[in-house]
Length: 74
Image (cartoon, rainbow, N blue to C red):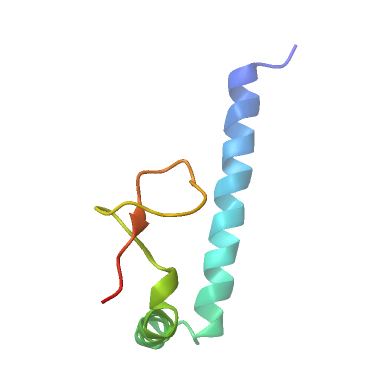
């Protein structure tokens, strides 16, 4: 009989490995250079700032089940 705890750990390990693989792909996309990745993220934030979610203000629209909300634009 299989131990449910062992199965849970195996599933968790699979998820962790999947996340690590995605991180490796993202890193490779920027030649494993954290500065290049940071520059890309900052530029994306500028381009898509209206989509970012911040804590502290109420969101309008569909709830995501979280308390985080969109920052009001000025």
